[in-house]
Length: 124
Image 1 (cartoon, rainbow, N blue to C red):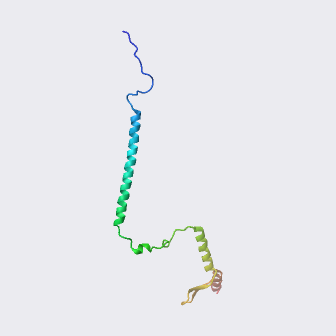
Image 2: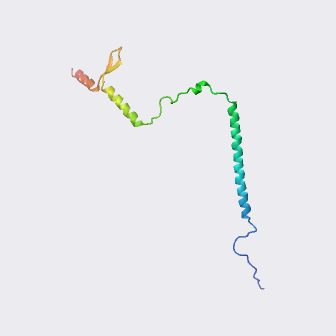
Image 3: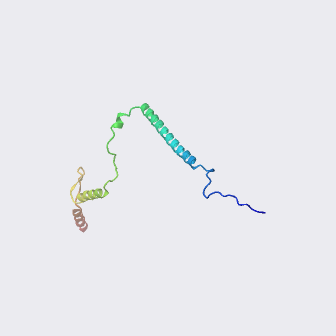
């Protein structure tokens, strides 16, 4: 038996099975449709939001009189400065005279003077 050589196709892909142009057009159509749906949802939600805002009562006057700064304790914006101020206040208290309770006669004295008084009292 003799075999006959058949004509072969040119190298490449088969053009009759896959239409690339049609696939790209369907993809572009889906992207456009998705964008239109997103726009429609956006405008619908904006309409619903404005309708809801129109039905809400006016805020009470107390809500507009809120303080401009939050209450204590606040977050530290400059912890190093705050620590320096605290240390300065403590040093001033330790190095000065002042009343703790004037009615009962309790005072605070500088730390050096307090140590001298304690040493003198301990030596008696």
